[in-house]
Structure formats: structure tokens, C-alpha cells
Image 1 (tube, rainbow, N blue to C red):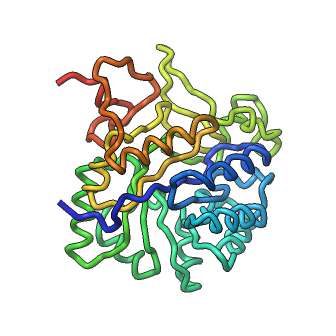
Image 2: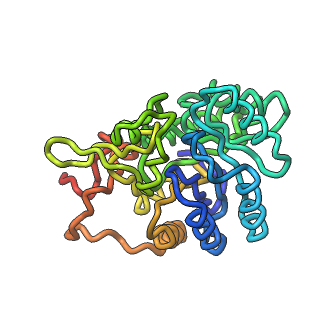
Length: 307
């Protein structure tokens, strides 16, 4: 089994995927400055119409977090749809202060051509050592494993990377609604019967996304503008040891609107070996999942299964 390249396991706070108010962002990151996370990703990675926060606003928050000892990374938009998006991407990559999480190939190209180190986002779909090696040579220092990869596959991939001299660190999506797909259409606007370019920013009414339920009332997906996420929230707090054992150096926690301080505290306890073992008799929250990590359908939960 691969050895972890970073000991102890680092905790990263991913970018906020949902559309919050400026006040909510400001308070969230003021609180996060005191949380036991090592890395904080900032920026709008979903929709370019969410313009409340400008690059200068993110840079200001980043400077404050850096003063608190956090590594700050600016996340690029995942789906680039216009020349304006490309101009914003250039400004992001040329910020001159913080590294960038490249969430599409245009961001990779921009960082590589400028000689800038970058983090590879999960949407780059890096499944093999050859692809990771190519991007490492282009400047990638860390990459996010695709969210549907199992723990065994992550272990195998990182082990193969080390054997072949590829040193880019691995990061695992450990908490939050799993980002699954992006589209040029806005599903939240469609729900409100408004066109995308006149959406009235209705997704801000849903600070944790809009649940899409099956006919059996099961939450199958979460709609977040042009992004589709899992209906259940992935929670690997009881699998932190296996994340570290896989060789990954970072566990990513995706922000939620409420209760994030408690989530971070529990993951911090878990990486120190102080998290209480799960009670097999406790009723599980139906929205929790960990199936992908255990090699099963993503919406499954290991503690909800019998042998």
C-alpha cells in the first residue's frame, strides 16, 4: 500500500459550490479562519452569472486566511462558455498572489503557458498515471481524484504514480454533495420557469441546492444552477484512516450553509484518531452516503448495509 505523501492528513475546505449572499460568504470565512483546516479554496467555480463576489473580494478574503496560516487556492470556473469567461480566467490565473485550482483544460493551458503551478480539479477526470504525469510536467502539484473512484482505485493509482516517479499529491473528496455534472442549461432557472440569461438569481434562494426527488420521494440529485450534485451528502469521516492509507495527502470538505464548524471539528478529530466509532444501532440520516469510496453505487452507505 502506498505511503501518504503528507503526514498527518491535511484538511482542505473546498470552494463554496452554492450561491450565497456577500454577507454569508464574509461570515463563513471569518469563522473558517479559526477552523483546523490547512487549505482553503476560494472562488466561483460553477456559474459566471453569480457576480456578487469579484476577484478582488476573493483576494481580500484570501489574504486574511493566509494571515491565519491557511494555504489559499483560487478555484477556476468548471464550464467556460464565453469570451468573458476566458477573460475572467486570465485575471484569475494572473492574480499574482495565490495558486489556482484548474477545473478545465483552458485553465490548465493558461497556467502551464505562464509557468504557474496549479492544482488539478476533479472535473479534469484524471484516472491514470500517464495523464497525471503529463499535467505534473505542465506544473500540477496536486490533483483531485474523480469523485466516483473507490478507495482501492485511489490507492492503486497513487501507488502506480509513486512507482513511476510521479510526485503530484492526491486529494480526496471526503465531505459534501458530490459534484457529478455541469450543463450549459440552468436547471434551477428551469424549475422557476425563467430563461438562464434572465434567471433573477433564483439559486440564491437555495443555499444548499434544490433537492430533486424520485417518485418514491428519495432525494436522487441536488440541483445547483448548471451543476448537478448527488442528493445524498458524502461523509467519509469514519474513513479518514483509509484516505491517509491510500497515499492521498488531503481530504476535501465541501462547504455547507450550516453546521460546517462541527463537520471540520469531527474530521480533525478523525485524523488524530480521536473520533468515536460509529454506533451500529444508531439511525442514519438518509442523506448520508459513502458508496463510491467503498466500491458500490454512490448513494449507498456502508453502515446502512448488512454483511
